[in-house]
Image 1 (spheres, rainbow, N blue to C red):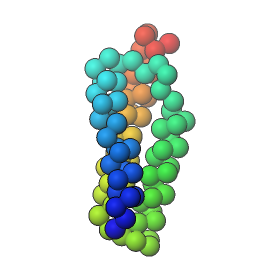
Image 2 (image 1 turned 180 degrees about the vertical axis):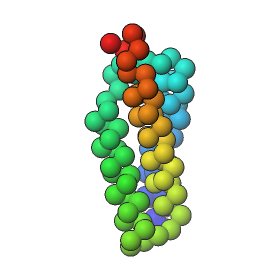
Image 3 (image 1 turned 90 degrees about the vertical axis):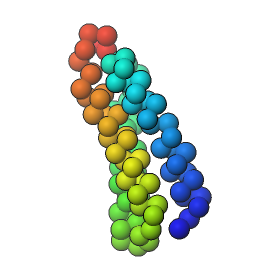
Image 4 (image 1 turned 60 degrees about the vertical axis):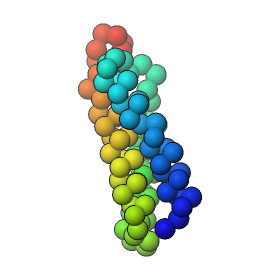
Length: 87
């Protein structure tokens, strides 16, 4: 297991719960980029595929957790994008 890869995923993943909570609380998605979220999801998916095919270890679960956090935030963006304060 790469300690540095795990550290990167922990640091990246640490910011998503706050972003999700803020979006859920305010229902304001102005300034959130769906393209950025999709690119991050694709990147985490590539990491997961690599772990499954070549180097399965505990870091797989960090990729999965981060992917689920980003997907949750993206789902909220799609849910709230048509509210009046987001137009």
